[in-house]
Length: 136
Length: 134
Image: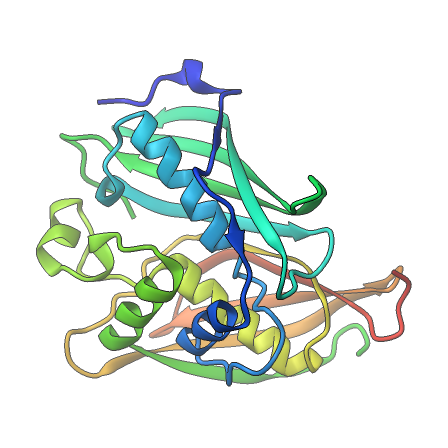
């Protein structure tokens, strides 16, 4: 089922915040091949953005396995630190249909416990419809 | 760092075990990164790496090149899938040059390939120059 273009502008908050612990950061860093004793990897906020994306998919009844990540860009206001409590809210910024697929543009703002913007993740999600093939 | 500096090539090998570890650490359990049948059912050539894992390898390269400078921007398009075989692994090759140094920010031009093919489109990383203005 195609994604409805009228969703543009709608927001989907992640259902919970994440407290950034040293263990969580180390586990993520080690999975990327870092030694695990350095800074928070710059792609760490995908963990938060993914929660918000899952909230969007659940709300709109889209299957995760029909989603391919087309683009991801992060801009950072400040580094993420151990001890931060962070939560992401996804906004749909565009929906296009190309060749049987929905191209869904999103922007997820990650904010700390004070409501300050920490980073923004802009993602393009390619949704292959039920009959669709050709996601790349 | 100064414009046109060529940064040393970084090569990272990805295996299916790495995809499992990344799924666990990131929370992204999309079966297209684990299950050959599901991947093919949505038109993919096989099990593919998470785009964010490939981008994370760029983050590793940037950390190595800049000695852990603060990243202010990182992103790319995921233009070609990185297909990870069931046995053995596949190499992701990250090359970079310094594109510009301005206003305390260093912007890198990047090229990320797998088996000779570009896998990231318009990859871009910007870091804060050491001693640069906040």
